[in-house]
Each structure stands twice: as C-alpha cells, then as structure tokens.
Amino acid sequence: MSAHLSYGRVNLNILREAARKELREFLDKCGGSKAIVWDEYLTGPFGLIAQYSLLKEHEVEKMFTLKGGRLPAADVKNIIFFVRPRLELMDIIAENVISEDKMHSPRDFHMLFVPRRSMLCEQRLKEQGVLGSFINIDEYILDLIPYDGDLLSMEDMHIDTTHECYLESDQTSLYHTAKGLMTLQALYGTIPQIFGKGECARHVANMMLRMKREFAGSQTQILPVFDSLLLLDRNVDLLTPLATQLTYEGLIDEVYGITNGYVKLPPEKFSAQKKQGEAGKDLPTEPKKMQLNSAEELYAEIRDKNFNGVGAALSKKAKIISAAFEERHSAKTVGEIKQFVSQLPHMQAARSSLANHTSIAELIKDITTSEAFFDNLTVEQEFMTGVDTDKVNTYIEDCIAQKDPLIKILRLVCMQSVCNNGLKQKLLDYYKREILQTYGYEHMLTLNNLEKTGLLKPQTSTRNNYPTIRKTLKLWMEDANEQNPNDISYVYSGYAPLSIRLTQVLARPGWRSIEEVLKMLPGPHFEERQQLPAGLHKKRQQGENRTTLVFFLGGVTYAEIAALRFLSQMEDGGTEYIIATTKLINGTSWIKSLMDRPEAQS
Image (cartoon, rainbow, N blue to C red; front, side, top):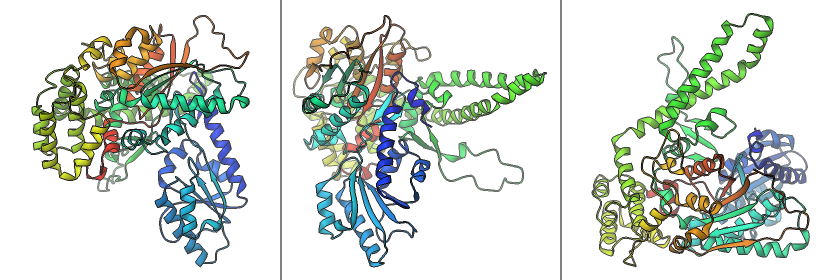
C-alpha cells in the first residue's frame, strides 16, 4: 500500500511509520475491545496513514460516524472519539455521552484530538457535565501527511491558512506549519538553508528558528536529507491557482475534485459490459471511487502530462499491452508458458488501469473540446498576456447575464484584477454591482474577502507591474510544446507558474539576479542558515543533485506540482524537489474557501 512513498529521493514512508507508531501507542492505552467514533472530516486523511487492518490488530471492532443522539449499539469496552478541536463537535459528543450514561452502559470513554488538544473544547465538555466521563484525553499531532513519494500536505487539518492569515490576522496555522517542519527535521535532519518570500513565510521561518533555539540541547544527530527549504506565500502568486490547469491530474481535479488522493467519477463510463439478458437492469448509480497516486504505473506516467499529450501516451500503452498478451501464442515450452503465466496478474492490472484512464480521458475530453471551455480558456490567456485587462470584458458580462456559476465569474474577475495590478475604481464598481444584482447582495462579504486577500482590489498606483514581472520571469512562452515539453509553461499551455519560476531561478542563477522583480511582489524575501551539529555536514558527490523542500503556505495546485516534477527530471537541473503544502487546491476550492457562504455559490 505504501511502497510508492519510499521510491523517491526522500523516503517519506519514515514519516508515515512515525505517525502509525503513535496511533498504535494510543490505541494500546485503551485496553480491551474498542469502537471508534469518527469526526467524518478525519476519515480521509487517516486513510493515508492507517487502514482498517491496523486498527483491527489493536482490537478496534466497530467504527461509527459522529452524529447527535445515541451511539449505535456495540458490544465493546471502550468508545474512542477521534475529533478535530471544534466546539460544535463537543456538543454532539456530550449528547452521545449523556445518552450512554442514561443507559448505565459500563463503557470507558476516550478522546483523541487531531491535530491539537484544546482547552476551550475541554471547557465546553466541562460545562456540559461530561468531562469527568473521559478516562483518556490526548492529542494526535498529524501535521504533514505523505500523499505521494514527493508530496506532503497538512490538508487543512487546521483552519484554512489563507482565510486565517489574511482575513482574520490569526497566525495559528503558521504555528502548526512551523511545528510540522520541526517534526520533519527530527526525522530527516536539520535543513541548513532556508529561503522565503512573503509575510507568512517570514513568520513561519521566525517561529521555526525560535523553536530550534528552545530545543537546542535535544537536536537529533541525523545527516540532513534536505539541502534547503523554500517557503512560499500563496499571495506572492495569486494568479496561478485562478488559471485552469491543463495537466491530466490538474484537469481531473478541476472537473471532479480530488480529495485525500481519491476521485469520484460518473459510474456509467465504468460499468462492466452487460451480460446478455441483463439489458433491462439499471446502470450503477454510486459514483466510482478511484485512488490516484504513483503506486499505479500508468497514472505515474501520464498524471503530469499536458492533456493534449495524454491520448498518444494511452494509445502507445495499449499497443504495448496488446503485444504482451499476443506473446502467449509464441510460448511453446513449459518454461515459456510458466513465465507468461507469472506475468499475467501484472498484465491484467495494466489492462484494467488502461481501461480506467481511457474512460477518464474520454470524460475530460468531452469538456475540453466544448465551446464553453475554449471560450473561457481564451479569455484567461488574453488576461495572462496582458490583452485588455483594463476594460470591461464582454465574455464576463455575458457569463453574468446567463447566470453562470458565481465561482466561474469570480475566478475570471480576480484574474483580470491580478493581471492588471488591481482594477480602476469605476470598472471594479461596475463588476461588483453586476455580481450583486445578479447573484444577490449576500455576496457582498465574499467580495470584501477577495479584496482583503488582494485578489480583487482597486488600482492604487498608476503603474501596472505585471507586464514587467511577466517579461522578466518569462511567464508567457509562445508556442509551448505540449507533447514534448522543454519548459514548465506546458502545464498551462503557455503560462509558466510564477511560484515555480521563482523556485527555478532560486536554484540557478539565484534570486540576486531578479532583485527588482522580487521587490514588486508582496512581502519580504530572505535567506537564513541553520547551524548543523559538528560532523553532519553533507559531502556531495560529483554530479549528485541537491534536494530542496518547497513549502507552499496557503495551498498548491496539481499543475504547480507537475511543473516542479518536470524541473526535478531535467537532466541538467541539478535539483530535486519535494513538495509540501498546507492544502491541495484548485481555483474553485480556493475561491470557495474565501467565500462568506460557499453553499450559495451558484
């Protein structure tokens, strides 16, 4: 299950094993049979750390979803609540415990807060009169979760970083990030060099350095695995998440949404061929749930390709698999037949994988070849190249008139604003008035939130810096090669993500070459060094690549991840990247997290 985590440059399975060990220790504290009551939000992230088999080994017999009223019947000695520290959840737990007490059931209650224990929550339980019913109250610090061989995410266990830092001026999530980085360094050694850009990046670096000083005596004697850490604020590059991702994985996320490494797809494309006589039976109605990670050979091969290159890759794979199955006719001797049979399970898995991804590609192609998709992409690319960013856009006007989904409108208006360094007050007021009159005045707070984060703002200076940034960092590449890329701009068919260009320039020739552009971007840029204990300085072999951890504060898109993987694979790149983030995002989920009432999005 987790083998793919140890294939990369850095063995991320070490982090997963450390998390599993802690979980086992907590479960063993509660002797006897157990039932776990889950905060539903946690089941996805926990699935990446431990499967049911591990829980079963430690006498977990039943699992329930946390909901009001009485707990379902279960003949167990211990009830363990796995919850986030949220006050509203404490009220539900109190209801559960009180109804159990009324039944005089001789059960022991335990609580595991994920990722941090909360005094406020314990106080709420005390007010409800149930705090004394708990034998164990503990915390399970699940900060960075390994998603793949080169990807870690905090998956928003804490409140959304962008929301907290920019809308509420609350640095709690930054503290958790710093703690997560400390955990990482305890397992993989001190990271000698730290680079950063943005206000949040500066805060995280300061907190981490302070924690390092506090734990000065208890440093682990581990040879550093990472050569450097780059902390990047999401608001340094507000443009990239707004653009439509054009990689295979990025488009799956844009269209269907990937959650904790799984995607839910329309079932009709995946129903097995109907047997004769079953024609009248209904097609499956449950969405098909598929896991997406590099453990699947074909997916690892095509996930980061531009969608226009996926068809050719699938066709090539189909020919290889077909040729492999044809070999059975040429197997004459017993040895040859035996060898063919031994390869059969792998070949059948490859054929099934090919069928699945061909179906997904067909579903996505139906969307990418539509007129609506093309029109939307054309407007995005006009904004990114600086065409008419200071005028009312007729396409946006038409979309509002047709009452297209609000998030689509907000993505485009925010993109126009970012590419124009803000909109003239008259233009901004016009867009706001159109949106509020069409979608309702309750969205006034959403527009206010977008303004606070810098996504939709009035133009304060007469100078628009975006064209300078675009030209200096080569953010737009004409004729980007989508099939055989030679530059990161292939992930958006021409646009090179600003965040990844900054990462690329830092590796070579260094940020000193772009000082002027860095000053135009929000927040400070800095470099820090952490002292390594004597004897732990890494001696690099000739030709050995450096390893950099890039940490996105406020979220990262799959297209940016694909661009970093592209840089890691470049022959003369000299650097391999491991990606960490507070959350995996796309334009829709990002805007939704900033909306005042996300449920009123359409």
